[in-house]
Image (cartoon, rainbow, N blue to C red; front, side, top):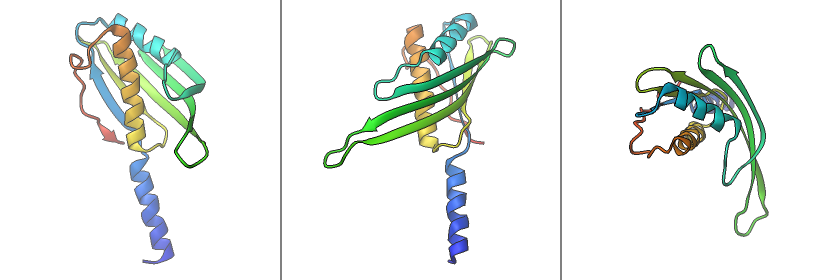
Length: 149
């Protein structure tokens, strides 16, 4: 394969790995108002064990029950036998509440990050919301990831 062919092949793989990622969750036994309040609280004050929140910007759209979040995280990764390595992660995601009964929430990571990292970020967000609402993850029904768009 030519150098140019390899370059296009690698770009294709990167594009497939770095598209938008969407996941939804239904919050049984909670009102849309309770879920909306929890979504705002978690978006505005995220909690991480291994990451430090460097920047967190949240835009609240009350008309469409939508949140836009831009977040920068950093951490120092310590591995045996090597010096600490600084990691930075940029997250841009949209959170939309569907005022159905039970309420449903869809989170879409918009920036180009590896799908696995995007899914971990979404899972982290939903875990924080469930913790705030005192919901057991087994009780909250979560739909399958919609995949890269």
